Amino acid sequence: MPMSPKVFHVRPPSRFRRLSSSSAFPLFCLIFGLAGILFGIVSISRSARRCPDLEPRSVTVVWDRSGGGDGSWTGGGTVERHKVMAFVGIQTGFGSVGRRRSIRQTWLPADGQGLVRLEEATGLAFRFVIGKTQDKSKMAALQREVNEYDDFMLLDIEEKYSNLPYKTLAFFKAAFALYDSDFYVKADDDIYLRPDRLSLLLAKERSNPQTYLGCMKKGPLFTDPNLKWYEPLGNLLGKEYFLHAYGPIYALSADVVSSLVALRNNSFRMFSNEDVTIGSWMLAMNVNHENNLSLCEPDCSSSSIAVWDIPKCSGLCNPEVKMLELHKREICSGGPTTSDG
Image 1 (cartoon, helix red, strand yellow):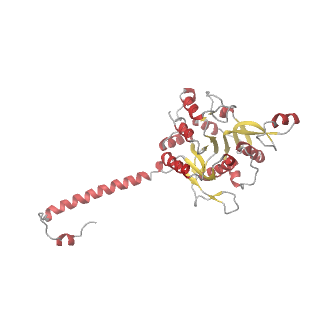
Image 2 (cartoon, one colour):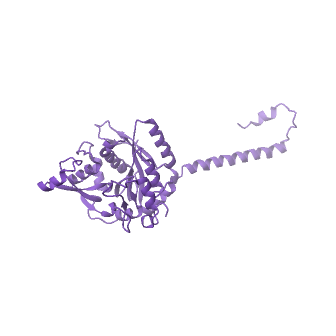
Image 3 (cartoon, helix red, strand yellow):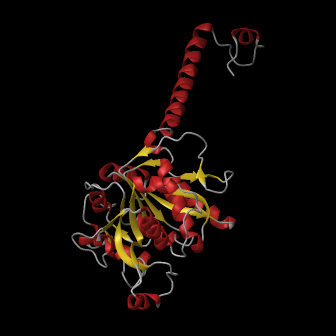
């Protein structure tokens, strides 16, 4: 704390030579100047941390279950929705650290500035979507990854396979609350994706605002989707079938997601498979099914958007390795908006 003039003048003499008033004034100016420079450096550094490009991108979504368990998102007050053409939620889990590493080394930038540039170039925002667990060590490891990469959407739902339909619905609700988008895309963490081509697909003009876009397949109505023997039996008996998108990647338009958001979690039946669950809801809502095979190609091509080992695996069979191998091929990674472009 600076000394007042009074204290300074009544200070007892020391064995050092007392400074004259003429020499004390320049010293005071020097100290004052250094203090000003230090204050300026601290202020600039604090301002830099508040720069919009460096603001945290990860978000924890909090649910209000007091109103009957419908899972409405509160988020702590009014939220300004971020405007993008589409929000892509990459569904991931606690055992998928290696998959996320491979994705960040290939088609998705690993740094914040790269994510910003990708969003500006394509109109697409990307986040890894994950729930929670009671395992404190896993949660601590996840927090370290969040701190390092800052590219997550954290949902207040237990992360386990049997919860996938509930997690998917929670994702769409949270994404709609946070992002003002034309489309909301659900993608798995074991596919090789071309963001630039996905952007072009979603940017197309569509006459029907209620669009369900994906690589479509047939599935049985009123049956357990795990009963593989039912399909030939259903064909023999003339049972009705419905189209639904393969689970690794599909997109819902804003009008469709807004209808999902308005639903209570127990409004529709939950099947064991998430893709069948969403497909049955789309049938009930009478949306427009848009089938695009570029979203499920088994190998890279000049038009492929999502590549995975269909029908052998629901995704790439060895995603951590296969993703890196694909990215080395120009036909897979070529383009100005991939992470190495």
